Image (cartoon, rainbow, N blue to C red; front, side, top):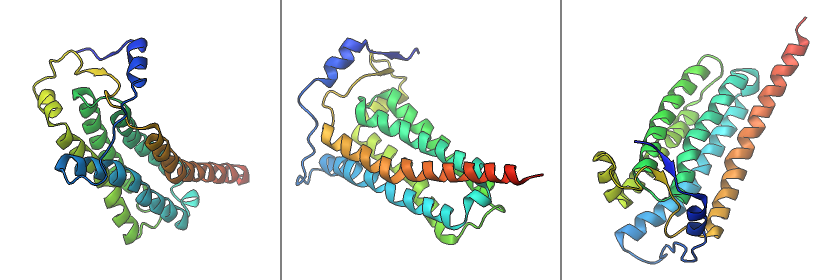
Length: 216
């Protein structure tokens, strides 16, 4: 099955639709409650354990221990988590998107295991950091589970091979999320994930350069 993108004109027309997705804030409907928890709970709160993990790396002087190699692994994990999140936010959830989400969740778990293996013996991994890791590892699976429940028809289609004409295409949502929500979430992720881990990688790279310069 070939993966195809819709023509740019069709994609642009999809983004121009004015009927942005509105999530009822007071509805007790199960679907509305699940969508609220996913959009306003799981995704924004992902930043909290991410910042806490960054702080634990800083406290244990990652730049003088496992260094750049571990910090690069952290960047890889952020990418593994970020790509499916962006797809789920801006594209219609179909078998292609669900497959990417599932594959990314598995890859993230494997990379997290490698990350701990890499750090063990090189720097102190405190019990509280291990507990933080448990949140970071389960959140991708939580997001995938809620997305799958909200799109059970697409899950069924995926397991049947996705024979529909748009099952393996990236297409814009019929009812896009509001620009305000996307901007707020992007700002939260940039301030709480991208900047701290970019600072960590820069600190590790500078420390490695300093060590190389001090060697005879």
